[in-house]
Length: 256
Image (cartoon, rainbow, N blue to C red):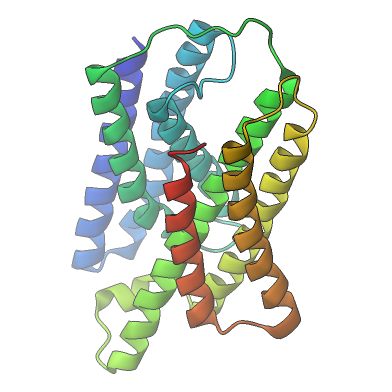
């Protein structure tokens, strides 16, 4: 049944994205509000999938690459639902849905081709669970920062074109986007810091390669946040850094 939960969730995100694009092209900004509720519906089915996989393994369902991708998507969606309106970024969901759809589609194909089945631990280590979950929640925040960075670059290009299209009037002001990038980077860095600290309390020490990869991701984001608060990075450069850093973080998933 868990595979159907994932399929339904993935289709909901695809439909939500397509409806939002159609609404934006027609200039009907109000209809984009449906995106929030579709994201919430997709999130519910994500939760059902993760619950089923969690019961299957008897622990946090991040035992293989497909589950890790779904957990990151879940992190992106829950942070969007929690922070989207607070950051005045209702369209953040529209831009994040393609990412969620692609990641979950890869997860569906991966599980269909080779589902490793139950992988219960010999002993449940709460520090390991905290390390993994906090780190992947951080990836969700970083993913949203990346998406906000893409939105900033799109908006910036529209401004400089002197002939802005309909999308320009639907996107949030540039200041909202730059502020959201900074806040999401800070949230992600706090979360991954908690995850790395938890790793040092695990019953079995993590492999050196695993810890090095996590440390590299943390260091890159920590430096970006530190420089931002000391010297103030230009919003455009910050957007590019948020995008590039997330690409690097995704590459490290093969190690993590």
